[in-house]
Length: 176
Image 1 (cartoon, rainbow, N blue to C red):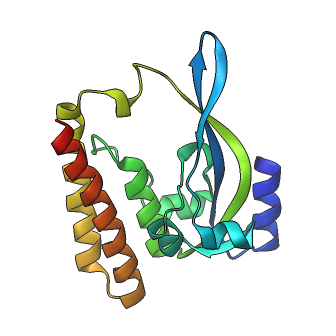
Image 2 (cartoon, one colour):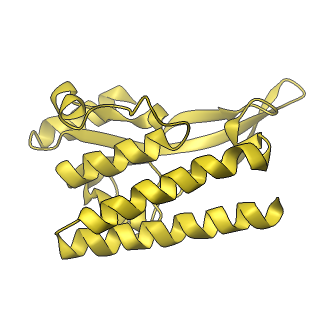
């Protein structure tokens, strides 16, 4: 994973961060079973490994996951790292802040990591009543990024992401 990301970042020294595709697995009777793959937009998948506009890729459905993140320390420090005061969505908040300050990122389209979804211990498996306030906080933060964005293209990408998050929030409330 690191070798592929380092190679891509070395070819583009102006790029400060990278992510990549991952496979989701679940333990089934002690065996790892494939349950899905990370979302990758058609545009990113068609181009293959390369440099992309981060907000556009995320707004079009490309997943960024902590297990595939590689960030230059100077860039991570410049955006304040993971926000310690948030109860949830701190990863997405970091991706957005990175994308706003460093619009382009490197993405490896072939699987470079595996995410083992643990039954019963994943936050996504917690009681919906516990999760929904976190999602609401995330919506409020994303709305603030939309409001504060002076770049028209970034604003549109942020609005698209906000709509996606509203859909997820609403569906969670309906399930509850």
